Amino acid sequence: MAACGLDFGTSNTTLGIGIGGAPSLVPLEGAHRTLPSAIFFAPGREAQIGRAAIDAYVEGTPGRLMRALKSVLGSSLVEESTPVGRERIRFRDVIARYLTAVKARAEAEAGISLDAVVHGRPVHFVDDDPAADRKAEDTLRQIAESIGFRHVRFQYEPIAAALDYERTVRAEEIALIADIGGGTSDFSIVRLSPERHRRDDRVEDILANDGVRIGGTDFDRTLSLGAVMPLLGLGSPMKRGDLAVPNAYFHDLATWSSINRLYNPKTLREIDEVVRDAARPELVTRLRRVVEAERGHSLAMAVEGAKIATSDQGQGSVDLGWVEPALSANVDRPRLASHTDDLARRMAERIGRCLDQAGLSAERIDALFLTGGSTGLPHVRAALIATVPDARVVDGDTFGSVGLGLTLEAARLA
Ligand SMILES: Nc1ncnc2c1ncn2[C@@H]1O[C@H](COP(=O)(O)OP(=O)(O)OP(=O)(O)O)[C@@H](O)[C@H]1O
Ligand SMILES: [Mg+2]
Image (tube, rainbow, N blue to C red; front, side, top):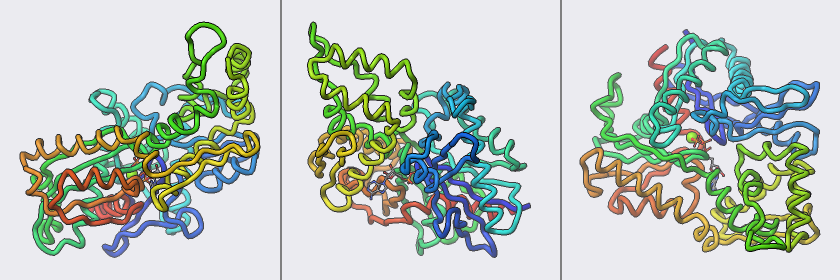
């Protein structure tokens, strides 16, 4: 039996194989071990995945780009279909197509056939809805089986990250693991030690497990709605009455998994009417341009890019010169924080719940282990650290820890 660890993330995917006990992530696109969770359908051509999918879209190839596919798990959308060229494909089949391609790449790269998988999953796919949560896992299991995995196990993503971190732990400690990704923020409080690392059953070492459906894509959306969409007419008045321009278009355009919903003739006609009735039609015309040209993902990528630049260098800008000459939005850390502070606060609150679940006070946490791309947001990092101020802060492999931990577990199965 050849087993792998599969971290199908909202933004990025990794797949790892443990050979000779040491887990390693398989290169999935050139030398890259992470693959953007993106698929691009062009009429009459085989679907492309990863960076190639994004590049095809950015180059203007006619077709449909889909990202944040994991976000539809646990919602009724997963059974719905989306138009792709002349056909319609159910979202669950889009995910299956994507994961089939990932599996095939890994098999070709490693020269083995994979028939067992330890699949990562967030602690909650959906907040406060256990039935929807179970359904999300069931759907992923059915997808995994349908693409050729005969044995499918799930592991919580933060527990997987804990297993990766534990390889470096030299003495027993209690750690808070924080995995802040694109779609969810997941937390575990675990007892770790070199001796415990060798045990198969770790149930008694897991003191708490909780999560919230907030991740980097929510920061993109909130930043977009706060700093960019007003330039496209959000919040601007209509000519008559006290009404503002309807905001649903802007919400869809700012939400990775909803962008494609705007691309249909009916929506364009509706937007035309809004342009006619808006007090500032020149703003709503910009919205129309983006929707008509099907450039919503370009806009979302520019916002995400500005978020990352602001995190890393203190400021960034969303260049909208392709919408209208010289149009742009500037972002700096205070602006980013002002639009997204509430999200960071809700993450930190979840840690409080985790500590309660574990029956521990914050001082009992020896280490705070950070992984996931959104730990790069300075105000998120500060909010996390503030919940356990005495803990040692350990930075994990930002995009690899979860996948490596899943792979460690897969290697034990083999
Ligand atoms: N330097 C950075 N600063 C801030 N955010 C970043 C940075 N680098 C990446 N991100 C964000 O991290 C997110 C992706 O992180 P990651 O790959 O860990 O998520 P994921 O595992 O795909 O998602 P999830 O686990 O929630 O399903 C994206 O929202 C991305 O914009
Ligand atoms: Mg993740």
